[in-house]
Length: 524
Image 1 (cartoon, rainbow, N blue to C red):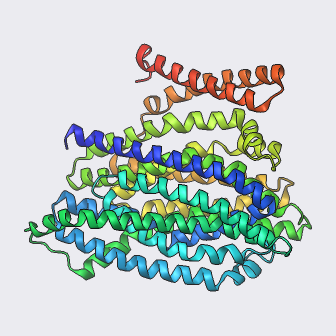
Image 2: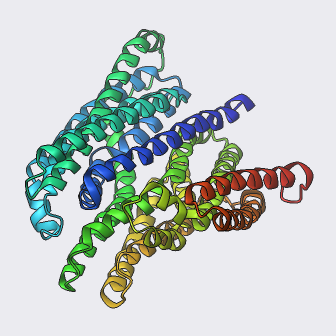
């Protein structure tokens, strides 16, 4: 494989990562007016509905982009374009079935989820769930179209569509949330209708992205059809084989990710039910809202880079593995980890040091002290989520699909026991969920790393991957902490102090990293 191709997946992964960061920043920014419009209770309902939506999304379509990307990459590497066309067509059929069934289940089962699964602890939950239901179908179809282009090594369509999708999402969420909460302000379910209005933005954003990809495909289709017409490969995959390949590729990815996503759903259910049995009912939705915004939303921004880089790495590793170029597989994995650690480690340190001022700035309605403690306890999840995501993708790329699934299941069992014990036998409350969230990816990463060593003799080069960002981040953290405290003592202004501290963080991190990279090369 050429050096250009080896660099290509990093470039496309970086494009997708930048888009992912922009998407999450837009998501964070629009959540501020949404929170102010629908209130803490509405945001708690919104966050809970999203956890249900996410698990159904995982069950119905999460594996599709990765499965399609992997299967398309294998066939393009071997120039089997007719087989690639069959993969696309069969995958669309699968998406219609799985996405459609899941959407109908959520729409007609919304009352059951609210009253039985959550025990009535989140009143009005059924309303936003019904609004989210059609989105599940749209995202299933969208996943196939994104996977088709990603499998050919281009992340640009996915990156552009994600940005437009999120912009539409933001505009509609704010407008619809405002309209519905005011329209139903005199009813007992005003907060739920406000949450439903905000979830409408997700549906409109997904619809926008689907339309963009359909138009893009019809522009690209003549080129693709010429490639299919020139295909003279003899081993043509029949339809039955294609469906089997899609399903067998999807299932381990879906099940593995389901264990991660279901952990959040189980956390919400356990927290809601256990707090009610302990007669702690007043703060359930508020605490869940703070957890989903001050903690989950903020750590999700750097986590998006791992998802983007893994999506870019997967077809590249599949191509190298298909060509039996095992040194290239190891090199690409190391490059991806280094790129991710460059962002994940300083993100963890930054959230630890100035997370509370950031929450105070963004989410004025929430208890910033509580949110700050959440980040101090759980921000390390940024690093381990990144490591677990990348290593899981690498195992999938070398056809070890079941291993990440098994490792995720083991982690889920430990997670449930840990969170249950913390909720039942300690006064930690919502912090139990933070501890559980932070511990979940640690176990997956350790087990994945062991599997990679056994399967392809891969060992993470500790010093090159971790040393420079870790030491640079430590220096950054010290100067950032001192800068914020000094400016707050002088100005008593959180916003001024945060801005200065943020600038200091950027300057000290990049300066330190440059020195270790260009001047002191002991970490190579």
